[in-house]
Image (cartoon, rainbow, N blue to C red; front, side, top):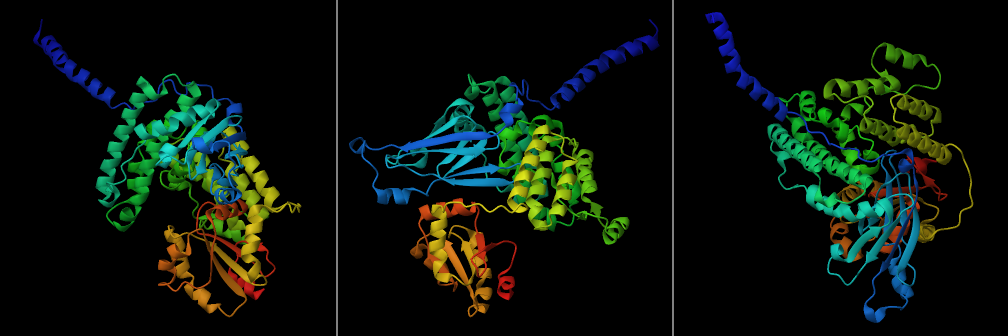
Length: 534
């Protein structure tokens, strides 16, 4: 054997272990994917809407069984409990009041546009699947809400509801106390890497089988596994959002490059994290809210002009000077930017959900410019490819047209909320009314009242009244109202009355303001001064 051949053999022997080791390292670096997922067929029927029966009862002590609840107790009880449905794809919610019968039971139909979580306030959340029943048991003798409130149900909804809390407790608990977002961009990036490593470990656990899901149906397992990974992604986005101020104030940080590096982990995991149809029935408002403003921020509208219905020379000139872009062009460019920078496909399910959310949240910008709204809707639909999202968008847009463009007068019977509201405003008829729904626990509510003090004082001799409506007691509010000299009419109502007003005006978030003109007609997108000048 000559020396040259011997050298080649020795080099091959010496390099072989290194090559094997390199392969091992490469294998370790592979991103784990959810296996056998989705494991159930998610057919079109399962994505459609329908009614869910929500029923429940109060557990009576043995000595009180069979007795009727006194009317005065029912009056206090009814209105305190509401069911809140949030259609997070088109940013629309519906609040319904629970009415107890005199035997302590209730039963009602709640429409959901697709299977989803619903909030039964203030008791907790349940999974609502069309055709199923949600059962709520309320035991007031228990010491805590956790002990006293039990959720159950039939079908897929009942199965997911029974497991949801257990899954949350074990796999979705999150430590909010570390506040790593306050420690600087490097600390936040290191924290993110740790969270992604934990996410990958969770995926491996799910691939080995979670004991809590043993024996449950395939679709229930898919929904709960999707919920686990979605919660992780939501929390990472939440921390990025909290650290935005530090990034904004640090001139040494290239925010665009930081954002790109921070969310680079999503692309290799997009198949289960974002480009996942199961998120339609396993995600929620908070998940999509966080990712649309952080991870998918290129989708947020900027430098965009809404096309006039017909050719307009000024618009054409602006676009020719490249000062602004058409909405259709912007939508496509935004999707392409996600692809170029985060390797997120333009057909990504969650990215398309965020585009729809963006459209339906900005309709109010155009007020009654229905041609512009129609053109914007058409421009948005050019980037929507998922059949279910197309269907939801068209149905929601149809509802918008019915509610806003087609003027239909219907004779509707007065509700309890109508009666309560009429009682509140009756003493102030003939004035412009600024009605602010608030609570002491709401910081933005108190801040808004402080900012309104000058306007209230300036208009004290004009035909306008400022009504501050709350379900807090006068004693509880006194410590804030008196030292801060909050003028206006302070109206205190019961929690039950508050619930009926929530149902009337369909609000859950506060502060919530209603403005009436001198004729008692509710007006939107106007200032008090405008109504005084009419």
